[in-house]
Each structure stands twice: as C-alpha cells, then as structure tokens.
Amino acid sequence: MPRVIISGAGIAGTVLAYWLGKNGFHVVVVERSSSSTQSGQIIDVEGPAQEIVTRMGLMEDIKSKVTHEAGIRFLDDSGRQIALFPVGTTGVSNEIEIMRPALAGVLLDAADSFPNVVFRNGCTIQSVQQTPSEVIVDIHNKAKDTTSQEHFDMLVASDGLRSPTRDLILPISERESCLKSIKVFAAFFSIPAEPQDRPYANLYQAPDRRSVFTKPLTEHETSAYLTYCKYDQKLHDARESRDVELQKKAVAGIFQGLGWETDRLLNGMMKTKNFYFEEISQVKLNKWSQGRCVLLGDTAYCPSPLTGQGTNLAILGAYLLASKLVKDGDNPTKAFEEYERDFRPYVNKVQPIPLRGYLPLLVNPDTSWGLWIQRFILSWISWLQPWKYFPDINNVPYKLPDV
Image 1 (cartoon, helix red, strand yellow):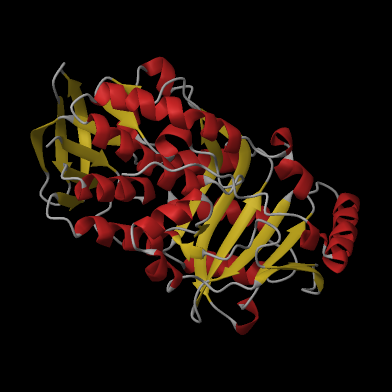
Image 2 (cartoon, one colour):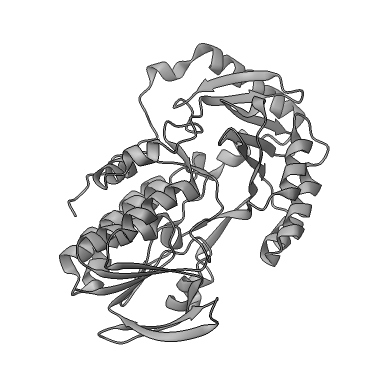
C-alpha cells in the first residue's frame, strides 16, 4: 500500500490519517508541537463535518466534550444585557461547540488506533524533493536534534494558515501571494472562569471597531477573544515578531480602559500560557497540488474564522481527499486533481467573507453613534425573534462519497 507523510496533526491531518489508515495506507504524521496538547479556541462542528465524524463513530465522544453554551448575550459598557440570542440562532453560538484541542485529541486518538498510522511529535519537514515515483523529505527531530531522510509515495501539507511545508512545495510566486489579510487582528486566550461567564457567551463592543468576547469553556476556564477590525502597524509587527509578550502588550495597548470586564480579561491575558494572536487572513491559491504533493485544510484554502467554515472545510476536505486516494492511490497526481476539481466549487461558495467582505466593519462600528444604532437594532431583533421563521442558512450541504 502507498506510504503517505502528512505534515500537521490538526483537524484536517488527523481526519485524513484516520481514513487512509482505515483503508490500509501506511501513514506518518509529523507535528511540530512536542506534545498532542495544543492551544486553540472554541470551534463548531456542523454541516457535512457532522456526518463525517458520525461515520467515524466519534459523535458521542465529541458531544461529551462540548461547552454547553446556551447562546450569546450582547452587553453595554456596564455589563447590562442589550440582546440575547439562544444557541443556534445567530451563527455565533451553535449546538456542537468544542475546544479545538479537545476535537483534535478525539480525532488523533481515532487515527492512532490503526497500527499503520504513526504520529511523530516534535518533528518538522526541512526539505522536499520530488521524483516521478516518490517524494523525498528531510525530517528534523527537535528533541534529538537529528535529521533523517525518508521516502514516501506522496506528501500532504496540512500544517495551518502559515504553513512552512507549503513554502517547500509551491513556487516562490505562489507562496508569496497566497495569504490575503482581512485587516482584522484577534487574540485568543484562556482565563480563569467566574460565575457570570456561564452559561452564555458575552459580547461587548466599543467604538473604534473593538470587541471583547467570552465563551464558557469549563467551570474553571473561560475562552476570551479580543478583536480589532482595523489595520494597525504595531499589531502587524507584533504578529510578525512571533514574540508572545510583545503581542500581549500590543493588544493591551488597544483595549486598555474599555468598559465591562475588559481589564479582567487583559489581566488574565498577561498571565495565561494558552495565548494565540493572529492577523486574520485567508489562503487563496491557483492550484492545491504540485506533482506528488498536495495541500489540505487551512494550508490550501483557509476561509478565516469570520466565515465559521474552517472546521467544516478541514474535515470535509480531508474526507474527500481520502476518497480520491483510496480510489487512485497508485496515481496521486490524478487523485489530487480530482480532489481539487470536485471540492473547489464548494470552497469558492463558503470561503467569501459575508456582505462582500464588509461584515467585520458592519458588525463592529467605528463611532459611538454607529454603536448606538447597532445596539438599538439588536435589541429589537432579540425581542422579535425572527429566526423562528427562517431555515438554517449556515449549513451548506454536500453529497458525501463512501470511503
């Protein structure tokens, strides 16, 4: 059976490893993190992704780890409730919400149950060479400080938005232009929970397009989000530096002095180790594969958190790629082309930022007057409850093949 190396043990990589392992492929998954415990935010499992994890027999395990969020409350500067939207009515709170590390752990355990699937933590791909019949990679083991050369039939890069493996595969012209910044900055982190953090998510917005957001995680931990919907050079430079302390200070400089519980969140942010900061971007490529190498998940078509489709695309893309490889494992180039041909139209449908890209600006007013209007409208929508009369518009269907 074909030998496959997957770079990245995130959502997409582990789902692909599961289905390939189940069908007899020999799979090696390398992950730069030294352990399977990763930081991350709350994500949704919806649409076709729900059907796929059900086929994997994992739905009940996933449901046992959901956050049990009841919905979302919009708050003013003093913490007074402006509007309340129950779970499933806004696209912000959904029925199956789970921390990314928890979902990744469930998927990893399922893939790791196959003896022909091997996970290597603390390892990265340093170089990639292709021949007509194989892919030759240099794999660096950080703990041992050793590099070994290994041979595979194909390589799958699924190591995230800023994938280093993608840069080893694509020509310079593609890798320099594929990242499209949305000019939105977001900090994701965990803080100690307080009673008011449950059972609802809480959203407080301030002028200058700033939002402060909490979502219940456990009785002891709350997930927090600070979002700034303007381009800021200091924030950009902080992200590029990869210096976590510099990033925290830059974020604090934007949000200090705001109302509600912003100071509590900032204090928690400065202390937490579970912190991630990003300049929200999308990935758009003319082609998802080069020879015997293919891109998957955020590495190939990151939609950004603003679409709410990242997890769905990761799981669905991995499942479809597996179906093509099971059919044409001896001809990966053909399998990769069919995977892109069949899946790109769906990606093109769900990847665009709503309202022609203006959604972040519309839902995050710049002025106090704009914020007052927004809060007035939200209060009336919450009171009228119009979602009772509309179908679920977030679930874009997809007819799944068998794997």
